[in-house]
Image 1 (tube, rainbow, N blue to C red):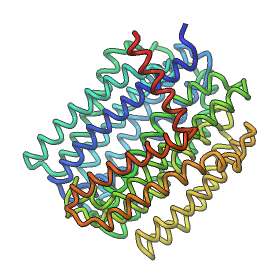
Image 2: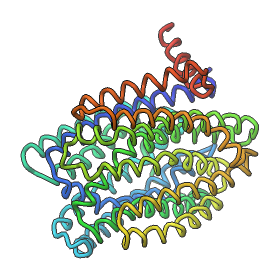
Image 3: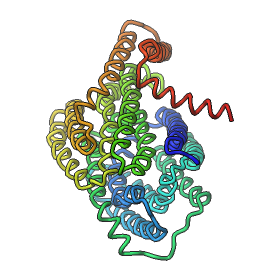
Image 4: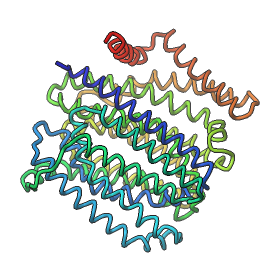
Length: 484
């Protein structure tokens, strides 16, 4: 019989392969598209992002995590949520479709009308797919999701690149997004084989909504916060400037958000299954935080150190203004997994009320930062985001810590060695970039190699505890695979 640890490791392995392969393909395709298209064309898609993201929050409505957390889900539960999601998907598609002219006038970009009306179809596609993902996630079955994600990423990448080479401009980005979601949905329905019953239960809806609506409001606040900067830059600056910001944001989110995507979607169902065993829950949670933040600090601070040669090598000199945004955003993004893990714990403990309260407080604190950005510029706004992320970490960890007996101070103590290590390594790598005068490609290669060697070398020599914990998991999995 498969133990919880084995299911967790198996889930992490496939989740890692999924994110690494899918994001790797997306990253490579994005680099080619960035060379073929202009910053303004990426900025136009950035303007639409906030409206798609907010609509998606309403469609999910917090039911996803409510279903994952519930121990005894029935077909009635799944079918009820499915029909509700589908209804919301259709409603918000229609809202976007008919409000497209107003959004276009707001940004003073006529092209946005048809872009929004076509891209909005992803809302209905996602609504059709959410329950399929939830069922697989609840089973901690990421192997099938991985296969589907890779196929969808390759197919959509080919579509996007072909259209870009043919001169379709911004429409190549639209086609890429729609085709990726469509292939994902078709394959999930084909291979997972779950089908809804012809039933909608008000009792089931009320029970799930009592937990989920607070997550809906919390998710909505977070979605608005994370995307409001796109709206502000697009409105008060330009589509071109927004293109630089979105490209920097996409680069920095590659390690931070995707690492949390790997850890979060596995840890939430696993921790939910032991939610009543507090000592075991706390022990597992501490290990997750320590190992996750070691990887996050090294990757994010390392990316800040190599930002210049990386941007110039991968997407060219026309994107040079995005370098400083990327370096600053790395300091914001490196705390994202820590925020998400602490908030995940509130959900595991069923405290969606506290989750919502914290989101309201943190987003209220973001208002001055947004005003600063309007009057003082994008760099000042990102500096404000740095301050806010530290405040948010304190608030999240304080309250999740009270539930588990794992305080803010204890978390700081646990992650400080990893932060110190990452600062030391990234500082050396950054100084190399200042002292070595080589073309960007050669410099990037030298910095990457030295950063990797320093990280593994120091961790091995000083017998870094969190590093060896991660290494033991990897070795255990590889050893078992080799033995079998």
